[in-house]
Structures are given as structure tokens and as C-alpha cells.
Length: 220
Length: 80
Image 1 (cartoon, one colour):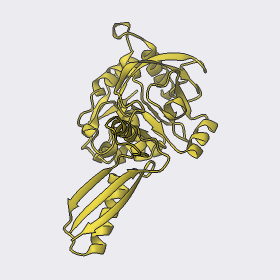
Image 2 (image 1 turned 90 degrees about the vertical axis):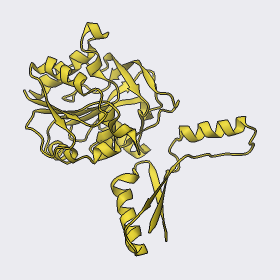
Image 3 (image 1 turned 135 degrees about the vertical axis):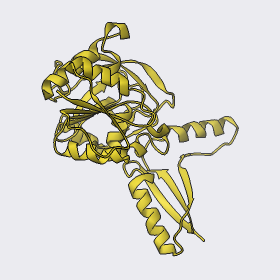
Image 4 (image 1 turned 90 degrees about the horizontal axis):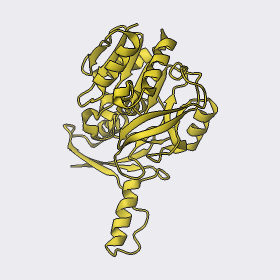
């Protein structure tokens, strides 16, 4: 089971997600620099959290245009599983692999705390390890997590079961309490909360370990 | 030539920064300031000497990077 983590300038959760993937697979992921143009062959790709390019212009906007992203887009369109966490979710929206955009939090504050999420759809490769309707606790740490899409898009996402995770107590004004989304072919997920930060009791929780275990089993 | 690109949020997109500015203005006693919206302005020099070519280049930049059509509109002014 080979995995790869894309590293952008000012990614800051790249090592965290690498540890989470190593824990789930037993193998260290390949770390791929944003300036590369070739992706190593892997069974799973991750775009980490952080503040790529300082969040300048729009969060994720410049990372979405970095050289490696064309290869990630090609892989995703060919069906490879790709996850984007926090800044990674913002990057996926900016590439158009996921619909909508992540805007400044409605309360304007940077939100940094653990939130409870409801598993809305456990049919995806990303959430198969959970019961539908189960609750998990993941930390959030973001300034731009307020998901926006027009009503027609939101209705379509809900109708197609593509809202995978919803906030129980919305921390950022996100439309329809959306915390995590899946693309139309089911192989790309973006989420604002950080499962990679709760993979051990030492870190305050293990819901993230269950998340990565479930998704690695699903893509193996 | 110079280009001045103005990027604004689309109508209907919630603008918490605009709302905070509106509230601060009201706090300073500026009565009647409503629907405050915050956007951004990007200025640059372009090598093109022809206005149409400069505008086409700025338009391409907006589409590829400067604006996100999901929630933003843009307008371009070309200045000599």
C-alpha cells in the first residue's frame, strides 16, 4: 500500500498526515514537493493542512496552480483516491475537483478547537469505517472554513449523498453545516477538520486513527 | 500599459468582513452606511502596448488565478 503526501510551501500538517498514513499502512508515504511535475505511483494521495503560499490571494488558490497539481488532477480524474484536509480541501475546491469555495469564517475569528461531526454518508471509501449517523470528534484550526456554494449546487450535493461530514455545532458559518464533501465519482474528499491530529490517546483522541484505518482498508 | 483589476464578491455571497466594517463605521457615528462590501484591487504594469492585448492578458489572468468565479466577480481597467 503506497501513499503520497504533497508538500506546499507553508504546509504545516504534512508530517502529521504522513504519520497517520504510516500508522494505517505500515509504510512511510512518499513526500512530494509542490514544484515537482511527476507524481510517484501510489494508491492514495493526500493534500495536507497548512497555509500554502501564506493564504495570499485566496486560501489554496496559488497551491492549486502549482506544478504538481496538474499531475494530481490527472490522477484524480483517472479515479485515484485523493483526500484534502483543511488547506488541502481549499486547494481541491480551487482546482475545481470539488465544487464550491471556502471563505472567511462567518465570525471572522480563527477557530481552533475540537468539534463533533456527524457521519452523514458511510458509503464512501473515506467513511466506510463508520456507522451512518455516528459522531466523531476531530479538531479544526482554520480561518477560512466557511463552505460556500450556490443553492442549486448545495441541493445537488445533498441529493447525491456527497455531504460526508456535517458539523453538529457549526463553528464557521459553513453552508448547511458542511464539514466534508465527496466528488461526483466518489474518489476525492475534502474536509476542514483534522483527523490526522487525533490518531493516538496521547494526542487527545483516536477517532482519526479509525478514519484512516477505514479508508486505507477501503482503498487496499 | 497598466492594469487595475477590481475583484468583488458576487451579490448574495455573505461578506463577514464587510459586515464588520459596516458595524465599525456605525460605531464611529457614520449613520446610513449600508451594504458595505469588501473586495480587492490588484494593480500591475503590463508589457503590452496595445489596449486590447493588455485587456485580453488581464482577462486571462483573472480566469486562471486572480478571481474565483464561484464567489467573485472582476472588472478590468486598462490605463495608459
